[in-house]
Length: 157
Image 1 (cartoon, helix red, strand yellow):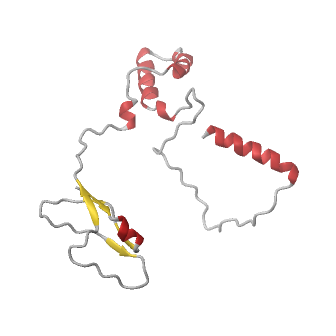
Image 2 (tube, rainbow, N blue to C red; image 1 turned 60 degrees about the vertical axis):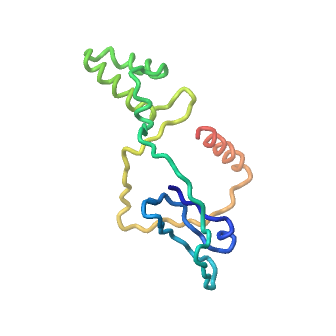
Image 3 (cartoon, rainbow, N blue to C red; image 1 turned 90 degrees about the horizontal axis):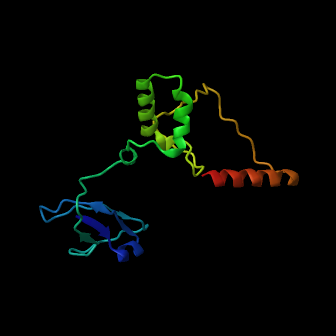
């Protein structure tokens, strides 16, 4: 069951968390926060929220599984063709499987860069303190260049 807070309580400064709860014992414990600077008393049988039945989703499929087709995307076939002339047939097949598996992190035909969270690179700065430079106004001649670069960066996202 899904518990959702009552709008009147929110307006009165009481926040009830939206939560999934088990209702087999006919009693449900919920979390509430008093956002006011004075005490608030909730009367017995006060309606604090609504409860709804939700269905369990058992067949979840990750994005990588959706992309796990055996077909190589058209924009990546040229990449395989350029490299594969120097490889054995089994190496070509392994490369093709690898490219298909990680196709979502390669620059696509739409020009958007792929993203991954597989690897994190730490930057060791040692014991040095962060550099703090106060913001300064940009000269008028450089503002156009900065605006163009920001527009270009926003277009690639």
